[in-house]
Length: 302
Image 1 (cartoon, rainbow, N blue to C red):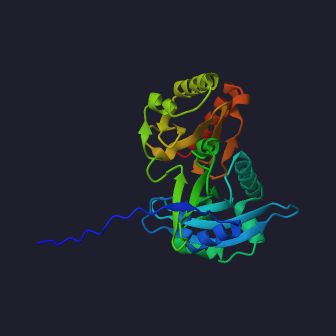
Image 2 (image 1 turned 90 degrees about the horizontal axis):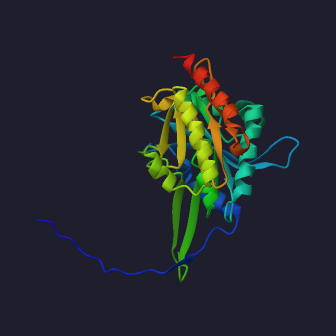
Image 3 (image 1 turned 180 degrees about the vertical axis):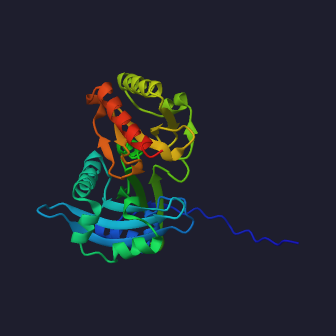
């Protein structure tokens, strides 16, 4: 026999109480570092490397730096975190993209050696059994709200977003924090959908859509494979049956699209990815050549 006790239902009115300062949001993430994990691990392994890092000869400052170990893929993600106490817009995204580009130019390991970290990065990678070539640089945009246009841009593989909403009861005796991920990689990034279903969810000019269709048809004719994902990205593969053979990810905005090229060297992932921003201003033939070049680099190791 089972005995259940039913508690009375009570409606609680909540009011907005977002973090007033970025430092408060930063402290919350440091205390709850597992929120910076985007892998499927039930027990995510995330380490905070430090906070408020500055670049040489620049006023640019990285709010937070963390590293996550994906036990399934046996790789680590170096997460560059940009915090905003208000709504994150295109300007915030470009700021984070700038930081990512700066680190890539210098080299993530060279950059970390210049900064005073809270942990020894080499020892941590050795403990996890991760080679330095298997560390992927990722950006994370954190704010109470992320604009719709930016959310669509975040569907690629180089920058992700987290919305952290803080609410309080009317008498301010309890606080509730809601966390939303963009894209919802744990669920959405693994859900393939049909092209017609994909385009129904895109707010994009018809002219841009036609250009993307022409580009994808050319790639298919070049014996590459295209898949549409519920997360909002279109991905190009060398092998239709191997999700690890991805060489490019395309995301759309209303008047254009962006492509992230996954780079390979001697057939191995180099993680020195490149984003073709404002791709609508580039000729399709040029884009196809760059994607095919990545495909050839990938094939050299197969």
